[in-house]
Length: 339
Ligand SMILES: Nc1ncnc2c1ncn2[C@@H]1O[C@H](COP(=O)(O)OP(=O)(O)O)[C@@H](O)[C@H]1O
Ligand SMILES: [Mg+2]
Image (cartoon, rainbow, N blue to C red; front, top):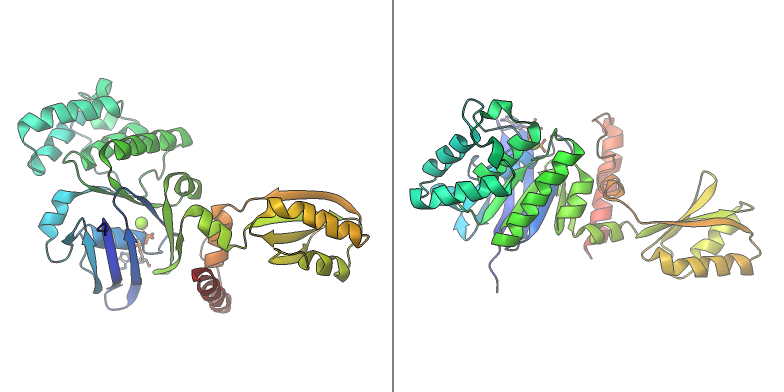
């Protein structure tokens, strides 16, 4: 059997004996996979990345990265992994090339190898023209690309990215990911990325975990997670609205739920497209006139809402009671989704 690139078992971190930042987190990432870790501010993403990269000692649990026990052999881990943190780490008073040379020396990349590698990275990440300029003159996007180059100068097998595109404009974000994808294809690197941007996670990650208040609340491919919502949402607009309509819609095979919302009925189903003719048929037979039917594939934003009980970018404002109710919903959703 193929060894996992990252294997995490019951990892927990409590700061100062009281802040439970990460609680009993377990998951595996396969070699070459792009795995996303999603969660709002304070969810425990950076704490997890710090533990997996031997920067922080866990309170309990175990992690094996590229076959090495992270907490038993931190020095070996550092050679095998690359890290791009959410904060800028490049030295602004050095040139791009100097930053890369420094990193290569730190990782003891032989000079004969580092020269061509630096040139090729500068070229590929399109910072070649600015290679001999001080980093403080770089744009945000260029700086991030340089930091990506620095992070992989020693040809790591696993790359950790902690909110790498925070603060970049959409163009900068797209550019950054394009390079990550190319490097990944070339080298078969495993990618572990935390991000705030759900669209990014959806596009880049083969699998995702959602972390909330230090706990994993859902894990799967983006489409599996969306399917767990009960799948698509078909919005059915009818001429009349009475309890009979919801009953007729709910009775159609494949329907998970049909609820009245504002001026229409929201019908949830795993495969909404196939359901549309059946819904139309059922309404026609029951003498319910239709004014419109539309289909929506759920987004990761909705997945996040479903599993955490709140909007992705919404700030903490929930009362304790709200929280308790929502946690109950999350548990229920997770239990149901796990099968
Ligand atoms: N060094 C620290 N000491 C105490 N608490 C911390 C420390 N670092 C993070 N925390 C707390 O741990 C929780 C998780 O933080 P973090 O891992 O940074 O979350 P994220 O990266 O998802 O925003 C938060 O409640 C945060 O305030
Ligand atoms: Mg963070």
